[in-house]
Structures are given as C-alpha cells and as structure tokens.
Length: 561
Image 1 (cartoon, rainbow, N blue to C red):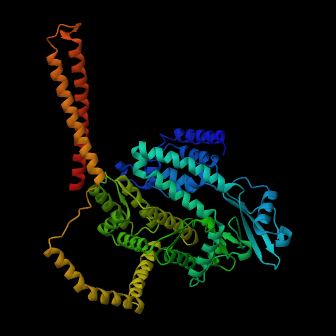
Image 2 (cartoon, one colour; image 1 turned 90 degrees about the vertical axis):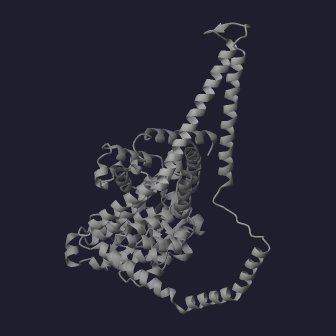
Image 3 (tube, rainbow, N blue to C red; image 1 turned 135 degrees about the horizontal axis):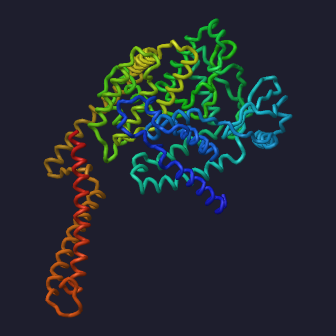
C-alpha cells in the first residue's frame, strides 16, 4: 500500500471510529442494568443505529466484516442490540469476475480448467468477503464445489490489521477502556483467526478431522476435500445438496420429525468441544443443511478454535457448575481462567455471579428462556464489568452454543436442550474419569511414584545439609521490582518537591525586607515569584497525594470484598 493510500485508509477508519465513539458500543460493561434481561437492554439503544453501524462496517471491506463477526461474540464489549445486528451481518459481496477466478484456479492447480474439470459453472453459488464458491464436476463424474480465495484478500487483511494494531496500541496506552479490554491482544487474536481462515489447506484438515470425530454419529455428514485439487487458496470438496434448516417445509417436518437429528447434532458438538478440543466458531443455521436422506451436512469449517486439555476441563466444570446452580464453582473457575485487572472487584463479581446463576437455574421450566449459550456470554460480560478480562475461549464457546441452539430450535422447537446438555456433559465427565484409570495412565503414575520414592532420601539429605550449613535462602517473587522502584521514585519525588517548596517559602521570607526592585501587594517581586511557584507545586503535590490515597483506599475495599 502506498503512503497516500495508507493515509487515506487511516482517515477512513478514523472517521468511522469517530462517528461511533458515543454510540454506546462498549456499554456491555454497564452493571446498572443488573436486573434486566438482554432483550430488555436491547431496547435502550436508539433505533436504527445498530443497523447503520453494520452497514458502515460492511462498507469498510472484508477485514471489518470479519471484525463485526468477531464482535458478535463479545457481549462484554457491545450492547445486545448491536450483537443482534452483527449476527445478521451478511457476508455477501459483489462476485469476482469469473476470468480472475479461472486464472487463479489454473495458477494454483497447475492445469487448465478444461483439463481439471468436465464442467465448471461460471456463475458462483455464493460470494463472500474472503472467497466465492463455484459448482464443478470432476473428470470421473464426482460433483464438487470449488472455493476460490478472492485475489489480493490476504494483502488487504494484512494492511488493515497493521493499521488496527497501531490504533489498538495507542488506545491501550492512552485510554482506560483500551487497557480494560486488551485491544492489542484482541487484534492479535483476530489476526491469528483470519490467518487460519484464509488458509484453505487448514480448512481441508478441519473437514477431515470433523469427519473422523463424527463417525459415531450416522445422522451427520461432513463433505470431504479432494486432495489433489486443494491448495492454500483453492479448496475443492464434495458438493452437498439440501435445504437450510431454517427453510425446511412444514409438511416435511410433519412427515419426518427431526428431534433425533437435533439431539445428535448437539451431542456431536459437545464432544467436539469437550472431548476433541475443536470449537467450530460459526455453526449458524446457514452452515447446516438437511440432505435428502435426512442427514445433516456441516460445512464452512474455516473458523475452528483449538482448546488445550486444561481449558477443556475448566470449561466443562464451569458449565456443569452453572447447570447445577453452584455459583462458587463457576466463580473460582472463571477467575482462574480470566485475567484479573488491577481494579478487579471480587466481591461485586461474586454477587453478580450469584444473581446470574440463580436467574439461569430459575428458568428450569423454560426450554428456550435463559439458554446455556446466553449464560456463558453473560459470564464474560459480567466479568469484564468487574475488572476480570474473560478468556477468548469463553466467548467463543458461548457463541457456538447460541448458534447450536438456533439450529436445534429450527429442527425441533420442543427439544429440551438444557437436559440434553447436562446429561451429555455428565457422560463426558464419567468417561474422562474412566480414561484416567486406564492401564497406561496407572502405569505412568506408578513410575512417577517409584521415581519420587527413589529420590526422596537424596532430597531430604540435601535439605538437612542446607539447614545445617545455614545456607537456606528465601526468595519472595510476589514483589515486582519494577513496581517497587516506581513507588520509591514517587516517594523520592514527593520528598524533593516538599524540600523545594520549603526552600522557596524560606527564600521569599529572606528577601521580604529587600528594597531592591518594585513591589506588589507590599512584597518584592522576587518574593511573589517564590511564593507563587511554591503555591503551584504545593497544590500539585496535594492533588497527587489525594488521588493516590483514594486509589489505595479503593484497592483495600476491593480486597476486603
């Protein structure tokens, strides 16, 4: 990007940010609406503003369309009305001319279109901000779809993210809001997510992994990639024919109830998250088709997050604790997963958490009242409001559960999702306990015990020798050297300022009787200057001390909470 184009892009993005600086986009932190539901909060945003915000985001290009999709998973950042508008954001853009598409396919696959396919439809099936999809037929008669990356999209994303990175760094240094949300970390996570999404070989691997993990679910189908026809910018996979779950005819619903399919889909995704550690972050109704043979086809697996075993265990216990109404367990786990800021209000957070979990448990009789996905997203929002920065996995899980609930509701509105989730998570927990008792794990633990028993005498002898020779040293790491030095510097500055003030006052008194020069209010000009400087320094010192003392008192109050 040229310097002129870069400045123009900065101006365009800056104008957008200024336009919505007072739109309440970060009101998700407001705890004054504790007793209201998300639907009630949505009405507090001026009508039309969220829709205009989405339109302006789309006008900024593909990077900001993806930013909008990412923001739709962050209730701690934005109010519900904006979340709803962002969830409806359309990733449909003007198609790339077919000549460019054909040229890119031939460049990536190393052969002419006519050689690769017996038929290639020039009219795209769909055109998004990252890629567009064309129907085709292989030489062996296999019906496929070819997903082709938009030319230059990778460079566009890199340039926009570089600008956002600089803006985020400035916001984090200069504003409390930027520090609280961790704008730099959020842009970094977005960059990583988009880098994965534009790597079609990674999406092909996700398709293979999901298909392997879902073998035990016969009602689900994942189209498979064609190995020799897939590169980083071109993905060729099986074509799926079916109807979106939101467009299923009423007659078909009556003739073929789909409660079993909905339940199997929910169980499969719970397994993917809590057993395999794969989170499909975008399983919305448009990405699930009901095929003619009654199977559910899953596709568009570019946005997949991977969870570590430790994170999976924490999320599993958190969700089970919430379902069981154990707010203390939810609080302990969420605090261990999140990042506690300096102004974290522990007592307020626990009180809000108690109310949140109680409200969720109180909806036991309402199948579609306060859902699990909404609960997880509210946990992230309340945590951020109290100074606990939520982990990104929490918001991704909440968004995934919300999307799944929308799909299962479209398939079978009578499905008791809460009971199904609780039953299956209990089963996952039991299976994990059994796996921990496997012969391999027991043998590994036995070897660890043997090693501990073998080395214990040596370690005890070393400890006793250290004590006998008076070489024991205790190192305290809780005190950060940088913080201590900063505090000492502040104390030294105050003492020095106080000495200077005293010197100025004494100097003013000494020159009071001088007859040199003019006078003002009966005092020599030099005395007036000394006293004025002393007064300014004294006021500044007093204000600084009061502000610091208040901050310390607030921190002490939070600790007592």
